[in-house]
Amino acid sequence: MLLFVHPSSAEDATTAAPPAAAAPAAVAKPAPPATPACAGPVAAVAETDKYAAVPAVPAVLTNCTPNSGDTAWMLASVALVLMMTIPGLGLFYGGMVRKKNVVDTVMTSFAITCLVTVLYAVVTYSLSFTHGTPYIGGLSRAFLQGILSDVNNGGIGNPNDLAPTIPETVYMCFQMTFAIITPALIAGAFAERMKFSAMLIFMTLWAIFVYAPVAHWVWGPDGFLNSANSDAKFHVLDFAGGTVVHINSGVAGLMCALMLGKRKETGPAHNIVLTFIGASLLWVGWFGFNAGSAVTAGVQAGMAMTVTQIATAVAALTWMFFEWAHRGKPTLLGICSGAVAGLVAITPASGFVGPAGAIAIGVAVGIVCYIMVTWVKAALGYDDALDCFGVHAAGGATGAILTGIFAVNQYGGTPGLLEGNPGQVINQLIGVGIVIAYDVVVSLIILFIIQATIGLRVSADVEQEGLDLSLHEEAVH
Image 1 (cartoon, rainbow, N blue to C red):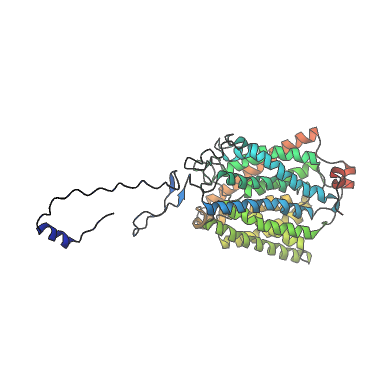
Image 2 (tube, rainbow, N blue to C red):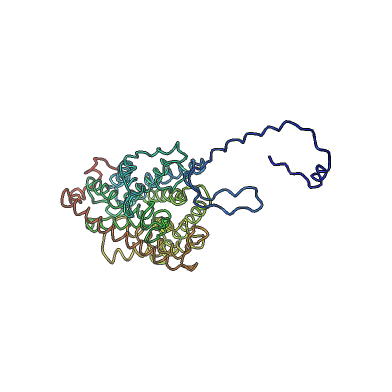
């Protein structure tokens, strides 16, 4: 404790008789410093308040003890994103196929969830999110080894410090749900005609050789497209998966559709109410997808949630009115498809744009995706059964490019074209092009290998009878 003496009192003390000698006062032993909440280096410090006795709390910290609020939000986000695949995507796709293929369609989403969970724990998390090269991670977290290795040493063991305030196990589970839904989206392109065995082999190889490298490029600690990596060649903004999830899955879906060829017959959606329920679950779960990608329960998560809601509603209405003007009637399938397109397009932008940008992105993607699934698909003649390419690849590319235009420095730390940074649009275009080119080549290689070994497509008899009875001996009644 410091004792402040008024100046007049000090003068009186010097003129008074000297006091009698006294034993020196005991000096208090200083208390040991409190254990800091974060033992790692400070990455960025907030401006010091000149009226405060101590500096302001650091704005960004690494190697932090897990924060209970952030951890609770991320646990909820894991559940929300998992809900997007099971049951959300399963019902969304299941309602759009014919009745005799519902079981196979829904089971595909469920089986992929189980398959990718195991793959992610064994190898793909490590390849995606540990330090390695600019193109692929290492194997330091293979089989999730050492995932708690630093928990008693002032940190939480994250190999990349991308999530310093939550346990690495939670961060791993959150990223796992992204790795799950991405290949599950691909299934919409080849619905009603791919062998179940071929699907499992394709998804295994694709998750390792396509998803993991692309995730590392864009989100890995030393990825060459990671906007947070100062050494990256191109700083691509992708907050929650425009390139990694949507362009990646949509392009792979198109390759599958081209390799398999058209279905022998098509029909109306089996149960549009199931599709409505699935779309609704996707919308709700997407808040975990986008707002959860902030990895903290803070301001950026709040803005990501806000723009996600706005862009989705705008895109749904845009699709509905565009379809109404074109076909004379609005449809439930149309407004649901528009909502999903809006969710897709705002995904890369959600941590970087504001409400005005969200409205613009919603309008643009509602029109672009409607044109893709209505006119472009018919003109080019490919059979993208449930419009995986038309919604996810086209919507993801639209959102990624528009992120470079509408990014706001105040929200995400990077200005876009409208704030005087045209180079960000170039970065976005480069990122989109690289992901598309790599995905096309590797996906086709995998598909050709499977075609040459066990074959990709079911027989004409199986397709005629329906995949449910032929492949699974189950049927919807």
